[in-house]
Length: 116
Length: 112
Image 1 (spheres, helix red, strand yellow):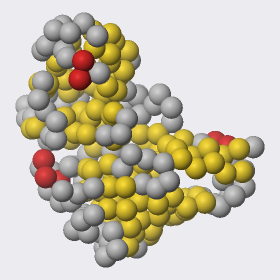
Image 2: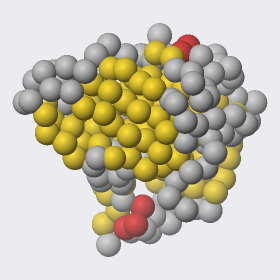
Image 3: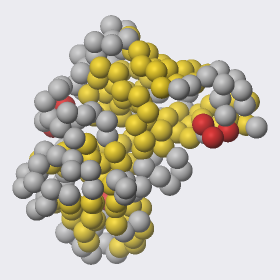
Image 4: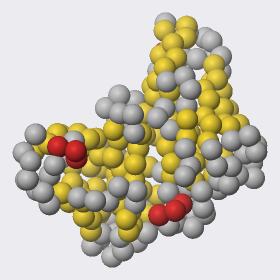
């Protein structure tokens, strides 16, 4: 059974700092990995998606990397801002075809606070 | 452009009562999903649908039923609510060729 772990559970940094959020998964046979952002009382917003054949994806100040063999992904946030404060979740999909076995497995997230 | 809309946003039920949560998407997405989010458990898939008229069980389907009579709507029903169903429920959708999931803002349900 796939397990996804995100450490630390919470992180507090001063504004302007570069930071890395970690995601690890137990089964390296994944189809893709996705990073989400969740604001309090809101749904999830997809930030970046990395296919299993890719090593990284970038969007603005965000960069996500994937090392399938070691079962790890990182989300790098450059020049953090107070508006980046949110919970960040990663999720892995095992199969391409949509079946119950291909469901997304989510980590519990890292709660990020960026202090002004 | 509304995206994924969930109603209601909050609800309190007594044990044994029934209710239906409505999810509507305006992006013509084929795939729709119902998740629940609980502290310490993360997000877990309840049921999903790969198209109009189809539904399938996810990871935690017991106590829930779903229907997808129209492509844009996905309903989640609780026939006899239990305190263990106290949770935040999220609906999500995506297109068949796009892995990016779009989520609704959630329904906070308390069962007393």
